Amino acid sequence: MKLFYKITGIALIALASSCSKELIYNNIAQINYGTSFGECIGFCKREVTLKSNKSTYNCYSWYPTTQTITKTDSISNTALDSICKLNTTSFFLLPETIGCPDCADGGAEWLELKMLSGETHKVTFEYNNEPALLKGNITKLRETLNKNNCN
Image (cartoon, rainbow, N blue to C red; front, side):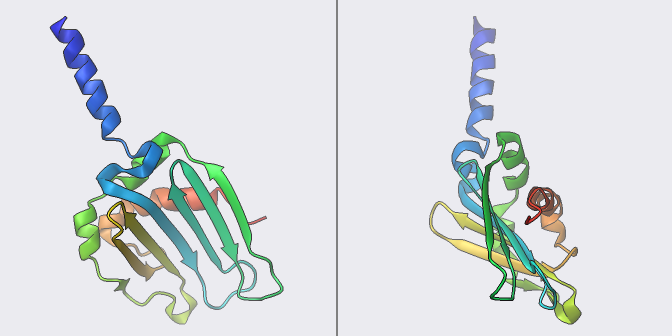
């Protein structure tokens, strides 16, 4: 019987520590990630917002004749868990701009966290040159963003 309670307790702790459902791991309420290129034709800015097991994709063009595309999809608990496990304290200490994002049309990426407390922090960095702290998270976010091909 004691073993049953230990296993049940461990299972409850594991469930409580995941960020799925309401994205509350580390008190994260919402994750925004995107890429942009200043000199391009077509969809030059792409972003994904993760909130409450939903992913919302947006594709923008710099040209007013090209309509913005928005798609909403569900995202698995496993995917959310792998993305939002990061050291939020260290993230909030990162500068808002790292390197020279989109200089010489090299592109830019950004990650923004919105916390349950209302606090937000956005870090913008050179395309494919994420800070070491974010490496694994950005890889997963790139995979998530690339599921939407803007068509």
